Image (cartoon, rainbow, N blue to C red; front, side, top):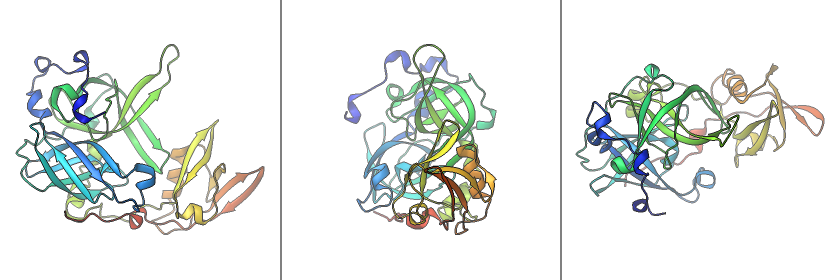
Length: 324
């Protein structure tokens, strides 16, 4: 579906009269984002070479906050404004721990910056606006359904993510605005949550804005947080019947080179039991910085074995951003 061919139904769109701030002005600062990634990029196979989503202007000099997977390894990047202008952009930073990405517009956006709110102050059942590029017709009146831990299969963990419902159909990089029009989260994923009766509930998982504040200056000056990188093994894992199971392996990652296999059940890391994805990641990251050896005890075909891959810094495998 072409970007111009869809809009949310009127009953789902936020109504300006319901808000104590200039909703239309705030939503004008949500821009469209399109990125092209080389076919030989490390993330091309899993994330594709053509990526599209949203971003939020957070500085009037053209700094745009988005979700990092949209811009990782991008060789070209374009920003689309609500008034139809198209400007090139440059990737400033990508933080793998939070998932945030920062983009600099290479031209004058002439859009207001959306101020930061406090995601820690957001409560379950609070009403929010999930802003997409295109103004009211592409934005959603929503509520906060949950604040809870989120563990992603790609070695990713948030201590407390924001979940909103109903789900935005173009969720990547959307801006979650609180009752005062302040930015409290950035859209990352679409999920389904089972209900006891009836259809499953569709949710967006959003990265809380409070996670950006301690690392913002580092991202702007260094392109990443100024601290040792976490160890990364390059596996995709899932929870099946209270067990953590390897479901996939990144090409040329430490896990594949060490002969971890799809279907392996992870029992422990460095002698510490593993019960959940979150526990697995915390066990690995507690061993030290990227490069540390990670002893993993597995169950495979009814046998128990220990494999010790040497971790790496995932960023070293990614193509660096370049000016267009």
